[in-house]
Length: 270
Image 1 (cartoon, rainbow, N blue to C red):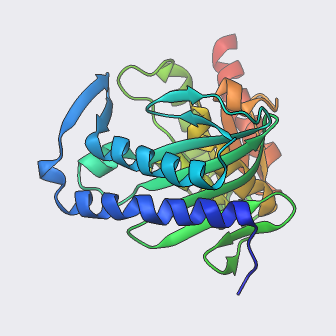
Image 2: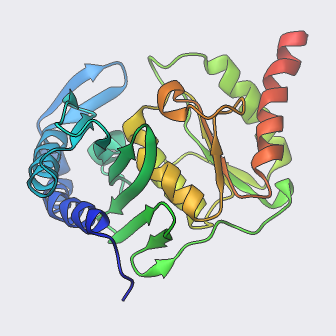
């Protein structure tokens, strides 16, 4: 049995408890009460129930920590250094369409830096977790990013811009370049799990624009602790603020970033 810190134990227990409701709702997805909160961006009653449960469990264990929540926004805590960053249901559109690919994501950010994360996929009972300096795991198995060194052997995941998302032209230029250079591109629809899969070596890299802190806070620490690299697509390190993220194994982070940047700059020079 791998020893987990008190914080990770709290996060994992909260994710498991909250996910019980998701499993029930997913079995009756056609009966969910659904409201629309923006173009192509849906929120279900399930989101709110899971978020409420997570807040209750985490606040019980760490009453002074603040929250940054997808549905409810920021909640200040007495402790100015520690912040729970939560996506109660990453992959809401998948969930609402009966596609079995979604997760609960909890990141712990300390002074602006992700230091622990839990991403729980309830349908497969996979608990991805990591803590700074202690490694990255799925359940009890240690994770390591893929060892592939060649772009033409790599599978890359991404998020495709949809209705209401900016700059589809930029994405299409990058997609064309990555398609030509790699073994394949996948779009699964849950950024937290994309990052977990990079950490697990199931794919070699992931890039996307316009993400929110709750999409990536847990995944960033997972990839880093599995030996991978995470940055902004232009090479910066303010991913939580910019929402532009590139994650990859240690061999392909630089060439993938160069490919993505050159695809846009080459098109702009024409």
